[in-house]
Length: 474
Image (tube, rainbow, N blue to C red; front, side, top):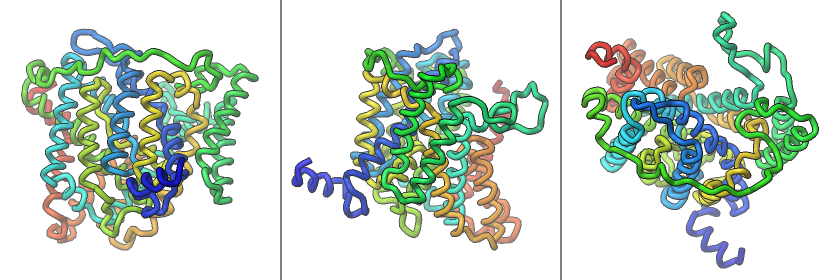
């Protein structure tokens, strides 16, 4: 790139000002894409597993197109407007909510309409400044705990997605929910690829090698392709992406799901009370999933100020709200900030330039889907453990463990995220614990009023099922 062009890009994205380089940004953008490219395959599986009230399934090819398109556009928007290396894609957890709770009660367009409404409400909350004030109301110790919880959460995601840790089936009648490998033993070539990748990345990190995460992902992808070819590993052993040299690198996208939305049709199917509860649930999940990720990225990048604020926070939150609504319009479920963005931050990404590369790669995946699915989980997931370590190391020492009204909520937040497999649940449990403990020790007045409102919302969120039964909603 010519010097003048480089200087323009530097000024536009404030690259030097944030202590980064164009090379770091591009490296980070690649690492983030590789760490989250699985969503192109996983989101269609989750949404495609559900049927709506009328027995209709969503088409897999159309879901792949919608998932990649909305992720690419939302990620580009965050890079250009928010100028942060926070990539966006279909939110895990929210997509299951849409597929398994909303769609069975109405049509798919109705369900996606409720996602759009949740996004519109989020944008209104940002425009009013309320979403920012909620973020400001969270004490620093709890912010740190949220970041640490995310570190543990993404580490568990890495261990599970790689096959290093597996879920014990309920039929085993055991109180131990997880186990090492298969039946307590590490078996198969894919797990070996993960272990070698983890060792390689940690060695590179210890040696302070630039591009450690990206080098590890690329190197282990090559190793996985060779292993898969030589050992004839069963496709099911690799998970969603099987490492191989693709026969074709292009495929035609199918845009038929885009815009298939009925904004208020769902209320006609389930009634206004149930409809509002559904929108509220989507809203709350999107609100706090994004907030937790933003806090985690801010702490890991070092860009957050002493109050935990990132540069251009209002723009960041607005783009997230747009992405939620955009996911509904694209019929691929709400899109939100992805915690795997920390993989790019770990590579040195500090600006929206990294997002431009990640977003372009998502858009290229529309026609180059075969290439996007070449990287197996076992090659990319070691990055999540490396980043999890870095996040925890940077935050655990800054929590006041001597104040139990902070220490207990912090602990509950940290353990709830991985153990319930949800960022939103972890934040909710932590906030409720903080309010209860401060009230029990006569310090209720030290809790910001807005945090009490948030706690009340989470109380409704956790008691949603009994509330629905109480008002006669099934």
